[in-house]
Length: 130
Image (cartoon, rainbow, N blue to C red):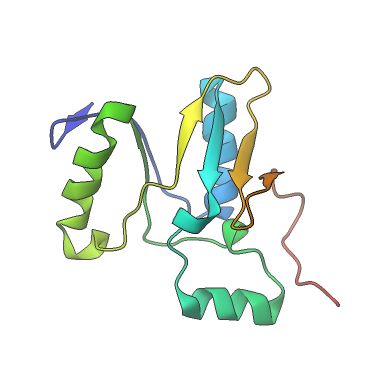
């Protein structure tokens, strides 16, 4: 599929299960791995504060009205510019990259420089107790 001159591979709505579940589904279905950059995730301060207060991980919170778009690497900046040109895409961001991975892991480079697996959500997301 081509849009705005970009070679699109996947468009997905991350409402159900949030970004983490959506990316794990794509990775498994496509037979690839993904590496996210935590600092690049456009989580608003209000959402971050609410998740912290409720003990939720924003990666697993439903993202109604959002879009995950995966395109060829060489088209990423072009697609980003097209999305940001629309008022509803003003906060669009490149949050990671797809790579070969026989295990189909979705991982994230944390804000502290470490790495962690962004695993499937197991059951319902429940707030932290402590």
